[in-house]
View (tube, rainbow, N blue to C red):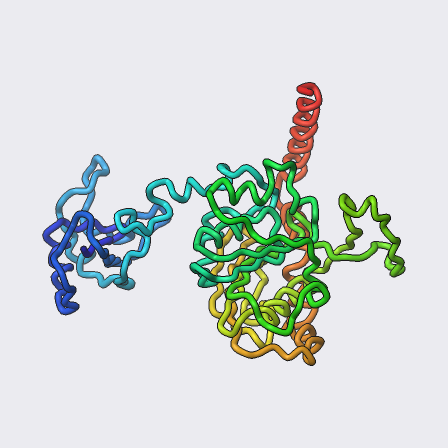
Length: 393
């Protein structure tokens, strides 16, 4: 089946059939099946669209009632398209590959899960990230900032063996025996992940590093917008480590201190270069403002090459990039310091562009008219909500 999709410019069935006939040279084997085909191909004829999604140069004129008439506008019809695309449909419900159809995507929605956190990755982006990382049945997938395990759950849906670490023991344990990472996996009949309380900044102290293990590392590192990054150590900086009595060790929450975003990314890329098999992929999300330059400001590693960068705008000033890197060179442990120092092409200047995002967003918001009034209104709403919860108790 070949589907014709001309956005903004409707074509009658006869003209669509004429377009289909031009692909006869491909000589597809088998009969044409317009219903329940084994394979579907899509032809897109792109034209210039206005802000409302309509054609800037429509093929047909409109009557006084605003409805499109059948009279053709020859000069508009003769305009060549901006581009034409032809490809195989990979997400079609009748082909069994559609995550949107049959409510499959809704089934794995965050709203359906028993255990969530403020930084849980939405199911659709998780699916895209695991696809970019080439996670498949039998893959060893790792998330060093696992949180509530939303990315690992998607990797498990693809048939991967999943491993996760996080520095926050409370997040790993969950709220109770029925609300935790494992309960999310059980909800969908998936094997539970292997979870370890670990600090990614000292990965080389926690695990053996002499042999690569993972086929894919898929993660959403902490940047301080919703949750700040932490690493082991005392805020006092005096290096003193107080011993923990044996009876308190089970429930003990180790001391942590702030973890600079520049170091988060340097350590992440270094761990990926160290633990990925050759050809394995790292896929992560990095937030950025308008001044971010992909060529100069993306973190780099000598053992990894950038495969793709997908940009998603979130606000006028803020967006996020889904970055995929592939291991192309064996890791040399003797060059560890050299690898870490070369993470940022422009040094601190590049690192600062992905740090302090929250503060930069607040500063940008303050410059907009009416900010003070909106801030006061939000503060009052939070106060009222808090009081209402107290009364409810």
